[in-house]
Image (spheres, rainbow, N blue to C red):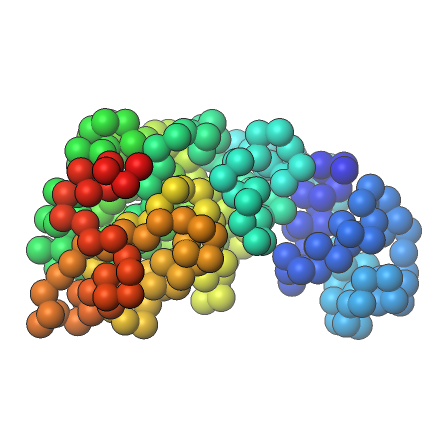
Length: 287
């Protein structure tokens, strides 16, 4: 497998995980695709006319050299599924990213104690205090917290790590040069120096609504367990919890008041088998 060719194809806008899977299955060396016409791409990979024309244009009008130069310019490391330093934890999930782009220390992702933390974008003071009580002892014991850099619980968890001198990993729903939300730009810079910023999207990819469920499977896949701290019944946090279960990971939840909507999701998870967590020891005892 040619690493640079895979990264180059991965930069083609609109090319999904499934599209790349078809290409890699039919053309493992990624050589024939560079000589195909759009019609041949339609026949060989069962692509729609729109996708085939877009890919054909990309192959014939974009530059591998330019893309690799841009990654180097922004100090972004690209790791493919076929590289030895690809995170082992992600190899076992159903649809591992073909390429991961990182700013920071990728070796952190091989740490044995990694916990994913997700939750509402509008946490209560009680919710933040409860999360701090649970994860601060873990952070102080050199655990790595993975989250999504979103407003609310994600930001609070990352910031708690930074302020306590611990490592943290942030998985984005955009490219690494398009930090979202914008107000977390400074936090993202700190994480890149004291942890790792990750994305499966090429660096200049703007955030899109459908990116975030894709991002969530990486958040859950990088760790042994996902901790949910305040979540509504219909939220991305519950999607992450479902994906964690599908990946064979544990799901923990911090209980909350039955009077608060932001606790309805976590209480629902507990009703349906998630481990109720009130302190760090509840997580440590499981592991």
